[in-house]
Length: 290
Image (tube, rainbow, N blue to C red; front, side):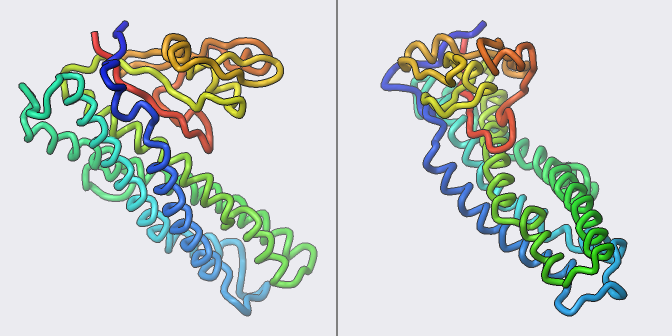
């Protein structure tokens, strides 16, 4: 398996650019929350009654306006994925020890950005071909289930319209859900951008998982990221120990969860292509070379 990319002055992006990613998360969550509020008003207009608001009407409205959600996701994830690709490019240049991009032409970096956008947006053959389409469909499908349940309860129990709105605001179109989606998808887009740059370089052959080095890390991510996980929770270690113990994978391979004591044992053997390992995951990967 490949070894650490570089130790000179520390690897660019070793910290996963946490602060910049958190800023993108916050901006993305704000945007998604605005979309959710608008969708709620479109799906359940003020003054709706049991005669004018059936489950089928509400679901149809949701599908008619799903592009609002997709547009917000595309904006957030494009910015993040291109940032991840840019970091990946800088890491490759650092590995090569030059800013002149020796033996790697500028055209290749254009191809990196094209590959990132192709993953996110698809081939241009219509809705459903890119990752952004897939995550939009997933969010809409789950929202549809919640809408059907909420309207069914509203009708059966003869509740006021405000009760239905409150129910949908509590999760389906909530700020908390917007934040969960933003955190998860920023993590995914950043990692994907990294990998597209590394793949194009011909230099990077593997990757190593990274996670925060503190006691709040979950039993999924702690062992992947080189931390011990005891029955009392994650145990911080030295930075060097974390680097040595973190799980590694080939560039187009998968990370295998090593298991461990307590709750970590439940995940032994599970495979992860890239972060996120779960909703709200903020892990990242770093490049390895032979």
